Image 1 (cartoon, rainbow, N blue to C red):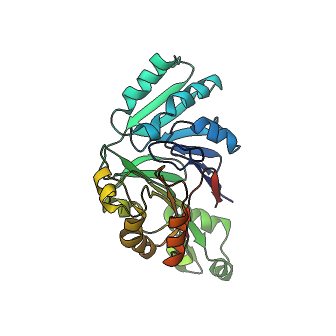
Image 2 (spheres, one colour; image 1 turned 120 degrees about the horizontal axis):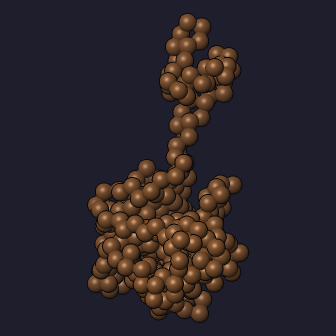
Image 3 (cartoon, rainbow, N blue to C red; image 1 turned 135 degrees about the vertical axis):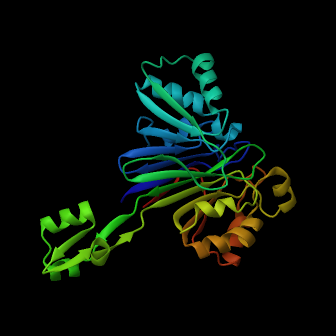
Length: 307
């Protein structure tokens, strides 16, 4: 197991008794990443048995309250837990929000905890937000009533040597060193490139698309496929309301988005961000079965997936 994806909240603008505001906790290797931080996120993290302290990077999609109002309290808790450094990414205005939270809501001594805030442009092409030793995070601008970002977290490709070829050629440690340093090596008077001896294997990929109306930009994040896509489905079949409010309906997802995701090679699709008008998600469930939509899931609070 490389990690775990946990959906902390599945409601839209107003939380319900059963649905918290938006937040997703991604565990990958020894790190943890938080996508959005709606009100109540701290309690959801505790309910899920997850760790505050492991969160090193937070990615905010936009500054509407249901996606960001849990951030001040979480930062205070991290400060109480002697966290020394955290990075926060999001749209323009995020620096001001964090500044007000950490000087007016409560006070953080920046010598004790450094908060690095980076505001990301809402571009039409994938934008490199940050990268680690074995992953990258990219964003793209979505189609909402305020600047809003979709994110793609992707593990770097790994090269897999063909065991049969390695054995046949009798490659030694020196050969592998040459392949890693120069991309080629010689055996028995013949030169082989690294690509002759194996292939690149795609890494894990997670895409988060929320608070948007239809836009071709979202498909730029899922290009080449993805292991998981978490995408909003605020309404069921109220397409005019969805267009007016700059959100998606299940009907639009089924007709316009699902077919493209499947062609791109998306493996699992998780619908979330449901309006509070839907106390019962049965219509969504029945439609998924009726239209035989494979690997489409309705998110519920604290749902998790291992990968």
